[in-house]
Length: 156
Length: 289
Image (cartoon, rainbow over all chains, first blue to last red; front, side, top):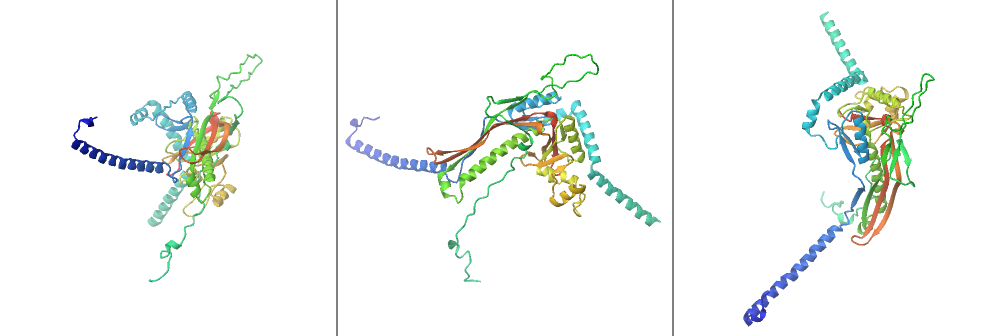
């Protein structure tokens, strides 16, 4: 801080003029700052925005199979129990999603190939039993028989 | 024609009338009514355990050995443990919004909070569907009648008690590869049903049958749909337990400091768990082709 007593009269007048300019700027700035505060306050209390919050004392977690089938979301205790139950049934579950490389690697294991073959066989057998498949087959059969009959009539 | 008086020329004269707001809707309680409800209120503790005792095998002669009652060797996960947890939703209903609204926003907030908690309960319960080890279908499969028979077989083998429930998404029921297609003979040229007798009539008249192949059928939108595939469930009541410590309650606090308004808060304290794993079967099927 300068010692104003050491300044000449002219220097002192010049210095005071500068200070007056500065304080005018300060006063203006203060008002602007207050206006900004007002803006922020009014934004915060915008009556059109009704704050809504959902709360829980736990976070539900997802589990994943080796081929990324999602299970859940489950309460953490249920996730632990589920992991144990599936392990007893011979299937390992994970708490993080498997990467594509991990899924691809698992799909090459004998365990997956065997279970996939079994599953595919079951699905194709069930599809074959379904009435939709039987209808499709019936329509194809009718078309084939009709075509044969028409062809036979023409040839005859 | 020029010089006409229309709503546009006298816009300032015509008031805007605002009708009462319509609330966004969710599916209500569907699953909770179908599972084992346990009242855990007024008792100490937050963890509800249900132990299982292994069945006994009778001897075929009179050379009897002592049989121990064993709760550790049950083929169900014993005990079935359920931890009660807190759930809540809160809305700050600001004074100015309340004063300016044509309808009672406090009523709307209460209704929406109640609805959100019911949805939370249902989603928590539906989250258990995929955690049953028995399952039918997969991530890219259309349902066929044999899947329902297989689910029935699994439930019977698990010594399930009636009624058997089937809870699926609306897409899994009415989707273009949904259950309805099992009953539909020809959708293109007319309404003809595979359903015999009154089932066929129900489908033709109502577009719905509430009972099918031994299952009471329900649909809910609270099951998560991944792409076009979802995990519904066929189950008996004892497959899942819903443990309630305190039901849904809504309280209103007046807030003055900070923002002026009413803090409307709904809370509920409950837990859910698999009770009998063998009495539930995940039904993972597509909604659309």
